[in-house]
Length: 281
Image 1: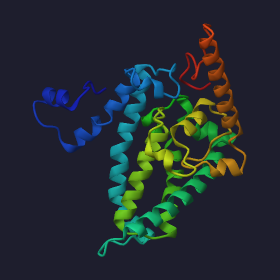
Image 2: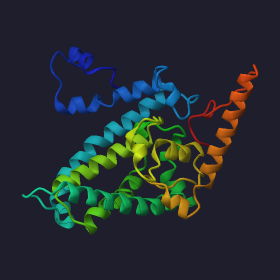
Image 3: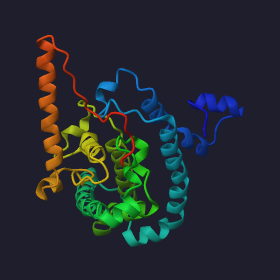
Image 4: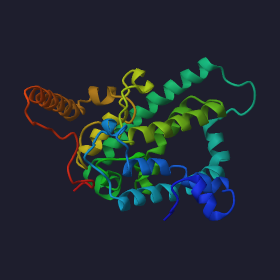
């Protein structure tokens, strides 16, 4: 257990400046604190406002992610020379143009999204779910740390789609690391449990975002909806978004009833999240 809420508090207890590794270890703590002590200014944007993870559950998720981080980074350092050869990564000058970089990132996003969609559906078959994917679905109201809270086999399998784009379309090392960074940030965002309508991501065509993936966890472990990690077109084409569309329609009707009841002086209320439940059955 890491009993420090801020970097200054940790350095005060240590009596020295933290190393980069120690800083990286506690850097995500504000996200954990936000989940436990979310101020009223952000609660309106919480997708499942009535679901509050107990401190023990949040700490378990955080510690799991914190343990995976140094292992993943160490593995990347060791394996990168061989991986770079497989990906045919370009290292030297000239640097890629902005146009080339954007075009490659678009291709990588589309390839990764399509392959992840089918791999995700595979993980929801009975055997794969019970043996592997069940771990990730322990949180029906995910937080950012839940992105990496999964079985080790799932982490390996879902890394394949992220590498597929650079394999098909080789790029410069700067583009490659930009792609990995974007994919990591996007994964944290979709598992954050918060939807901010003023986010610039809403300008991206067919982008699902946190609300889209949050429903996949909200529906529970047997969910057969919203498999795509980035966009919505695969779920639309293969008819695996029907549950989500029905859910949105139902919530809009309930909200309309609540507003009408309030206008008439009634006391109708509706719940946008699950009550008294944070683990799936």
